[in-house]
Image (tube, rainbow, N blue to C red):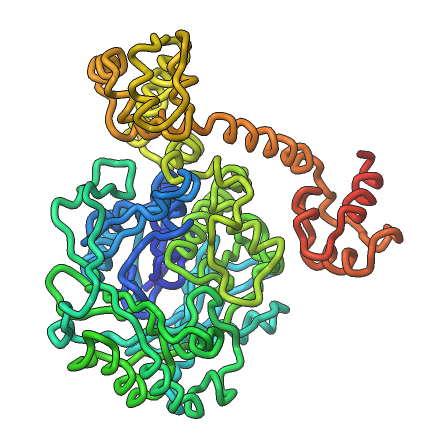
Length: 622
């Protein structure tokens, strides 16, 4: 069946696997996606949404790099919101509700339209390894398929165990069996593995809910989208709704705590801190007698509803009894109960920045196998693993994003350098250069890099260059154009800002906090310049940010430049840390384990102090 050797084999068809397949194939590698069920490629296993705080920035970055997630999201969206608009632009985060069935369908269509991508439905039970190098995979039917590189994106399937109350059964997600064999083999090769857990809420019949008792949660009045390409913008949207739990609901849930696998000790692995189960919330925040519940439709034409905020592994009868006491859910009908799932992962400090494993050459890990949680985090890792697998087998320089270049760079550096003992989720607070890493400029930051790789198309590059040129031109207009007090003072007075007595440049007055682009557009000289140059809303937004935050942006660029000096100080590959007696014992142990590539990476390792970094610098002649 498989006489020829593939360039890249991708194991698993979730968000990481789908992006890895697309990236490797689009760059020219003959790629095979092997998954247990071809009907669930790109499946939204949990909530039917993409983006959110920091996650939206990641989706924009994937899109700018030539990935598919942004395009698929736009094609299957049912609602769009820009979160955190009341804060500065570094915090703005796009989020879309999606049609679950259409999302998976669009992924399948996109991958089947990718010429160098092949597909095979079966479980991979092991790897083929020769002399510390992966050379293919073995399936559960005993078929050997050879490849130059392998990307593992097993999600929650590695020895997956599903819990509903006191019941437990093997599975990678509801209705699908677990994957076995790979963990045991990797441990034999010397890898460390661990267990994590995650959970999902009940799915219910929307026809059984009383929405009149809930608070409507509409999308944005003028919805945006994710992709920088010409994907569709929503002209109609589906409403979500919000309701709340109560003290009664909490009491009913507590009745089942003794039968909860989390509380009776059957589940000992760690779950996602920032997406806790409802029983975990009740336990951790005992002083609160109410928690928000978001009622999210699963698509345009289905009555299935996702009960966001009610993730649980309690017995199904307890789930049902408690949910019936939530306002609007009095007559609720279940499609399926919530459940928790435990699965194997591999601490990501065992990887290089390319996501290639340190122990086995040409083997890459991406997604939840690395201890992350979330579609967006998984998809970005899949994209980077797919890119680097292609580059490695073609003997080209690896592709690594720095912390000041992308949230994806922050994510991977955090995983590789610090590791994680709980499911890792991206937040804006994790990025020290978040003013540079905004959702609005991901194309300007990353499209040129992707185009150079041969992944971003000429069309993408053209859109990016036009946006850059027009934004630069508009910023320069504000720097050069003067105003007279009479035309600007009425605007300043309307926003309670001190008025001016003499002419100055528009840039200076536009930099004031309460003065907006709408105010500027009320000036004849500005509106005529916009009309003459046919600036779109993207250019207007980019210009406003560049003018109003120029000081902050410049400061962060300077800080990043200082960091780069340490990035340029390389540590020899087989450096013997035992020679440096001045290093603390903890630092020596951590440095030996993680083997940082640069002084900058060494400085970010937990347990390595500034004095340890100084010792390294002195020894390296710096």
